[in-house]
Image 1 (cartoon, rainbow, N blue to C red):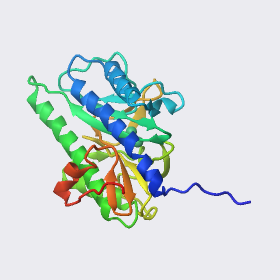
Image 2 (cartoon, rainbow, N blue to C red; image 1 turned 90 degrees about the vertical axis):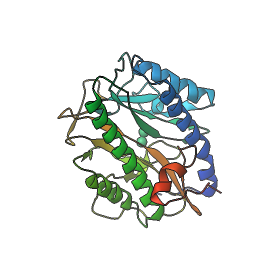
Image 3 (spheres, protein in one colour; image 1 turned 60 degrees about the vertical axis):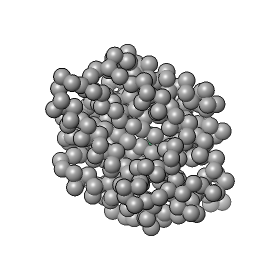
Image 4 (cartoon, rainbow, N blue to C red; image 1 turned 30 degrees about the vertical axis):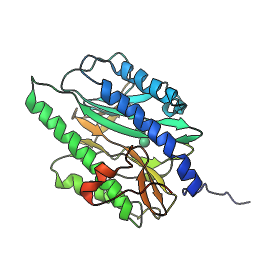
Length: 277
Ligand code: MG
Ligand code: MG
């Protein structure tokens, strides 16, 4: 008997079931966005995200990752991803990436946003971090726009790299990549944020991927802190991380973790998302 590889393409009904967990994931990040300010701890932000997800009938899916006990990852300044929320008090000027995910009725959402906290005392550093954040978010929208037109998945990474290169000196992390998403948060296939050999799987209805560029203001080497989770740039350069879960369906694409399906982010790139039928 041969091994049946799990398919990466969802049915139309399965795509419809991914809408609610996507929106709940978005709500958890919106709640964080409303609360984040200097003086709050990353642990408090974690609690806010958890309350939002549970109030919506969902479960924080990061808690389903073996060994992880929190709702969000909170990665500050040189920490890129997988920072553990806790007692750290956020300060003016910090650049803070919050990654969150909800599971609802057995399906998953995964999304991340980065915030730069206003800092009147150091406008130059603030402007640099805002620029890094803007470029990272825009690289995500370029990747999503590429998916809308792609014949193969690896065109997404090409578009992200091409955009980042056009914006100046930034690093694209290569040790961590995006992924398929569905009944599990992390599924096949990998979603690269940079050019690779090979075209990747065919882009066709049923493909659902989490696209998540992790961009630094310096080098791309990282190490994992002693907590076994927090990933930090070796050269201590600042980093930002944006992520959306995106569905390809018969009539177009839809950003599951954006309340407007990605319409506002994609409009400048000439792409109009279409609700899942
Ligand atoms: Mg994530
Ligand atoms: Mg992810």
